[in-house]
Amino acid sequence: MNPWLTLLLAVACVSFGSIFIRFAAAPALAVAFYRVGLASLMIAPFALRPALVHWPRLPRRERFAVFGSGIALALHFATWIESLRYTSIAASVLLVNLAPLFTVLLAWLVLRERVTRQVVGAIVLAMLGAALIAASDWSGGGVAPVEGDLLALAGAATLSTYHVIGRGVRDALPLAAYVQTVWTTAAAALALLLILAGVPFAPYPGRSLLFFFLLALVPTIGGHGLVNLSLRQLSAPVVGLFLLGEPIGATLLGWLCFGELPGPLTFAGGALVLAGLTLVVTTRQA
Image (cartoon, rainbow, N blue to C red; front, side, top):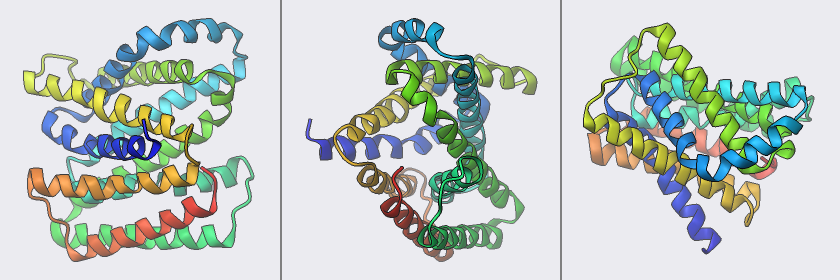
């Protein structure tokens, strides 16, 4: 497949994530559990064998990294999906896409990676955009939308934690084995959170089950799978730039499906967020 077409399809797939979550109309922890759990089951016929072969060879430190990565991914889905109950699709998706900025900060704090002045300026620009989005929610809907914004930011922070922890493990495991072990760990962590929170595993209406399946298939396996395929054919900054189309696609879909039209402050904040992210992506390898 043409790599540019692959990348466009990847952006289209991930843009449907927030839409399917809204249509599922189920508790956030249940949506997160079924999304990751079903995705791990779907790839098991292809990924389980390499995971079982390479896992015994993995040093203890890398095993703990896999577990940490899976737990961070579970927390990412739990917080971000919950944010969609309180704030708009546009605000939620824009804020959760701040993950690359959190990754830069974590890499600086934990891995001591150098951060340029241009990247620092980009972070300030994006954070100013995030503040405008929060201000729009505060002026338009009180406290609850701002809680949604904070949950989306928590989703961004935990997603970046997942990326930073997983950097070394990706080199120690084949891609299929890495994805299988991390997604299985995330599903197990979410199952535990379901039990602790008293959220039922079942029953859910047929409509919810349909969108659980679509979430696993389209944005999770299709979207992320096509992104990984694109990274083998195109540079990481190019892929990162194209993925900034997700907030735009999700906002358009949110308007078409739910009539959610962002206000002027959200538009302005979104423009600053996307500008900041563009600077980060173009000046730093992902």
